[in-house]
Structure formats: structure tokens, C-alpha cells
Image (tube, helix red, strand yellow):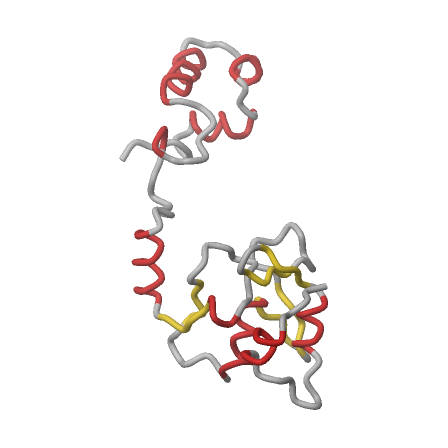
Length: 166
């Protein structure tokens, strides 16, 4: 359970009598550095919490609790890079354009492909070798196994669905 200091607690808007969502959110969170991180859904990048009938991301729900409804056409954006963080002073309401600029500034661009992508597992040379071996008639399963690919991923590369050249 998240333990808040008196100063941190004073910055948070108190719950209304009928609101138990915020108390639940505090119970299912822990402090990691400066962030309040929801741990209720350990595999979710952006965990959700149920409030009455609807489910919302915890950062959005905490922002609504602290500041009121999200303005029309706005999204709740993070100043930190932790999607599970819901600390109210780490979030702000912004537009999609602001979100895209922020993503570019933090180098979180989805259009980076190949060796430049930070999570790439196979170099361009290995991909080219796999394509050449399959084009020469070698079995896709054997090539995948020998080069460390998953078979469906290698099939998608061969069909041009992944690793396309820009």
C-alpha cells in the first residue's frame, strides 16, 4: 500500500463521501521514485480502475478526481515516462499534437525500424540471410530455428508485413 507523507496528502484533493475509488487507488499503489504506480494489473502498461459502471485508466481517473472532468478534445498526458504512474502532478491535460511532440522529444517514435529501433532482436544482415535462404528453397521452419526467429514472425517478414524498407 502507498504511504503518503502529510505534505503529499495535503496536495491531493480529499475524497467526497460517496467516492471510494481514490481510496482503492491508494491501496493498490506503491511509490517508485517520485511516482505513484498502480500495481493492480501487473501486466498492463496503463492499468485501469473501475468506477461505478465504467473503467478508466488510473491516471485519467486520478486526474478527474483531482481536477474535474477532462476538457473536450484533450487527453491526459504524463510528464514522466511511466504509464502506470497516476500522481496528479505528473499528469496534465493536453492535445494529441502535444502528445506527438512529446513522444518525438523523448525519442519514442513508432516509425523507427530495423537496427535503429531500440528493441530490435535481429540485425538487417540476419534478416537478409533468412530471406535469401528461404528464396533459395530452404524450409521456413528450419531457417527460423537456426537463426532464432519465431516462425510466424519470419513468415511475416518474407511476406513483407514486417521489416519493410522505407
